[in-house]
Amino acid sequence: MAKLTQEVVDQLNLQIQIELESAFIYKALSQWCSERGYTNSSKLFYEQQLEEQKHADKILKYIDNRNMSAEIPEISKPDMELLTLVDVYKEAFKHEVYVTHTYNELCDYLISIKDYITFNLAQWFANEQIEEEGYFMPLLDQVIQMGDTNTGLMLFDKELEI
Image 1: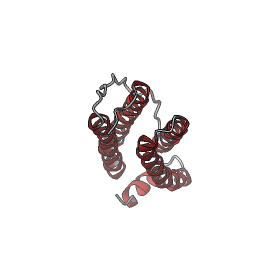
Image 2: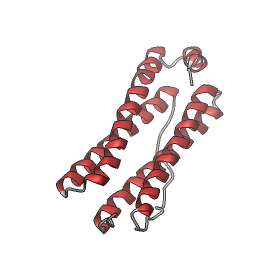
Image 3: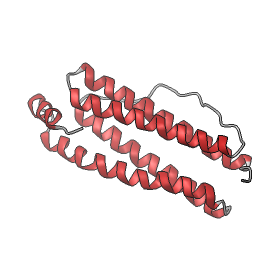
Image 4: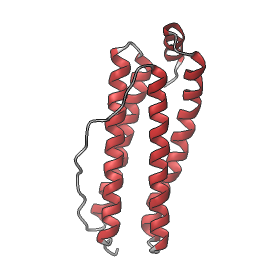
């Protein structure tokens, strides 16, 4: 199998950074929920964090299997202002939309340079993002409908299926 170009590796390293940032964001959301008694939301975001780490690992392994070196990026503390559970789910959905955008851009780039093998990897992630957005959109709608009342938000969390 042919080596990847350094430019493709750089693009994949950027996606590794985005996946690890996603894991940090979900860890922060999980902790925020845990501290406020939203147990099921905390579990949901904890599981999301693990999934994002697996995504980063999948890209790392791909680069390694193509005889190139991946970089483990520096990750900054998530910059979020969370006041309510509604804010938490808005942040999660907004972030998934952002990640989808980055994979779409990567797919466009890979097609432009005719790297169809790496495109297949990026397309897998783009398809995964459709699932992620589809998962969070109804949750965001539901939590918004509950309003900012503690009783409503606790009920939402209690009924959340993980």
